[in-house]
Length: 224
Image 1 (tube, rainbow, N blue to C red):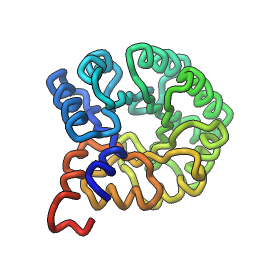
Image 2: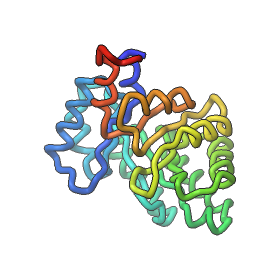
Image 3: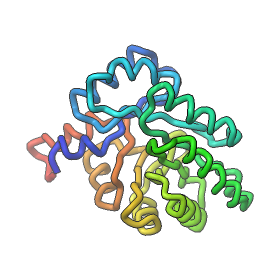
Image 4: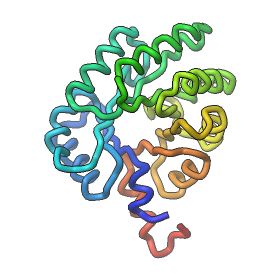
C-alpha cells in the first residue's frame, strides 16, 4: 500500500476541547498536503474549516452527541441539521449506550433512523463505543445499522476506556457485509496498526496520527 492510498482511508482528527483555530488551520493544511479523505472536527469549527478547505477535495466530518451519546434524539437531530447547514459533509453520531444496556432497541433504532433522515443523503457513521458493549450488543447494533443502511459503523469515540480492536473490526465487517463501511477509530497511531485494521475490514481510519501513519509507509525499512 502506498502513502497516497492509505491517506484516503484517513479522517484526520482533532476533537479534544482545547483545540483552537490555529490548530484547526494546521489540521486542514495537513489534510490538504497529505491528501487525507477528511478532517474530523467538533461542530463549532465547521465554518472556519469550510473556508480553509473550500478549494480542496478534503471533506469535513463532524461528531454528533459526542462523546457520550446521551443527548436526546431531538438534540442529535438538530445538531446534525445545523452541522450540515454549516458545511459538514459527513456525520459521526454516538449511539445511545444506556438505551442498549436497558434493552431499548426500538428506541436505539428510531434514533439512528431520525438522525439518518436528518442527514438527507450526507454520510452517517454510527459510533458504537465497543469497549462498553458485549459481543452480542455489538452484533445487534450492527444489524440495526445494516438494516437502516447507514454509511458506516464505527468502533469508538477514542474518549472512553478503549479504542479500535482488530477483532471488533472483523466482527463488524462480518455483520454489516460489503455494502456498509467500517471505521476504526481510537488508538490507531502507527502504520502497522492502521494496516491491521484495513486488513480486518476497515474502510476508514479515524486518527490524530495520520501523518505518522503515512510516513511509516515511506520508511525505507518498512515492510509495507
